[in-house]
Figure (cartoon, rainbow, N blue to C red):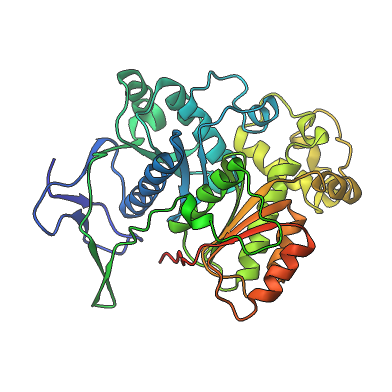
Amino acid sequence: MANELMLKYGCNPNQKPSRIFMQDGSDLPITVLNGKPGYINFLDAFNSWQLVKELKEATGLPAAASFKHVSPAGAAVGLPLSDTLKKIYFVDDLELSPLACAYARARGADRMSSYGDWAALSDVCDKETALMLKREVSDGVIAPGYTDEALEILKSKRRGTYNIVQIDPDYRPAPVEHKDVFGVTFEQGRNELKIDNELLNNIVTDNKEMPEAAKRDLLISLIALKYTQSNSVCYVKDGQAIGIGAGQQSRIHCTRLAGNKADIWFLRQHPKVLSLPFKADIRRPDRDNTIDVYISDDYMDVLADGIWEQFFTEKPEVLTREEKAAWLKELSGVALGSDAFFPFGDNIERAHRSGVEYIAQPGGSIRDDHVIETCNKYHMAMAFTGIRLFHH
């Protein structure tokens, strides 16, 4: 190890010189096993590692994240996958370890956004997870270790240039952190807040019922938000994020963005989507793009233009607005976290449309009574955590 690593450039090619280093002269907590990770790669790597490490500590399950531009496109723990999820995540032909299940879920939350991701794994990367990573479009991976077989598989990816980073799982950063903006140094205490079930004790709605699975999903949501560019909200179901809205200036736009992603995740499981007659040589990224178009209201234009012939062996039957609406009504049991308070009940109205039944948010708005009243209208259970989770 060394205490600095020179990089090709910073955020953009014109930003030189660039490096990562330890100000106290100690060794960097990472080793680059393959490739040449860049500035943004390391921003994603260090943020995503913290996320999966905390998910593992909070749930006891292997965890994975799929990062793009310093926010998670998806995060999940290693629960088994149903046959339907295996199919929509394109892993029904693979053997799946618990860690591989976690990454399949993390990447499958929003496959469009996960294209070219940085992957983070809480546990030593095994062969099953490496084989999954090898065939996806990904920039790199960070993990506390790699089996010999997994490392050999990953080193063969991208003509031998795939970025593989190993981090010391025992590394603990200094309690005070710094960054420079416009030549001015900012200093703050690290956000060492432990996210656990105690944050969910103050249930302020009429409905006080919060099953253990819902608590687990709310913890996943809050931990994901801790490492998502603010403003942000996160929808979670069955151990995985299904929609993350990051970096929006308005809370309602976060809720809409994440809710729309959750809707797409669920619509991908519609029988008509599962039976789409794709040509055999269509690549997975093209399938992802085509499925999103098929689900969207633009598909009628695609039919009219005859573009469908590029992807399908025969013209698929249209998934109508009425069918989509009916299918989405079946989505339920979703947990929703917010990194700051909901200022209006309109966020709850939008969340309800995507099956949200459990909510965790800081509280503290002058309109908390209206937000609680809207939750009560839909028999939701909502906890006030009292903790804001802004991340910039």
